Length: 60
Image (cartoon, rainbow, N blue to C red):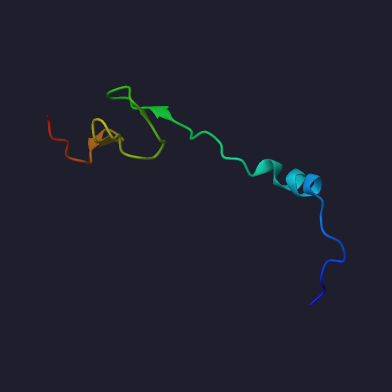
């Protein structure tokens, strides 16, 4: 197995990692209650997905 002859500098390492940062999650509005939810997931506030109730929500 070959080994690196010289170590990489900090600048070179950080340039390579420039695109590894976290991005904000994409959110969309629930058509029923207008809450922000991740796409393709059941709404956490009303429990609906694609016009149907898929999670029973208890009223508090």
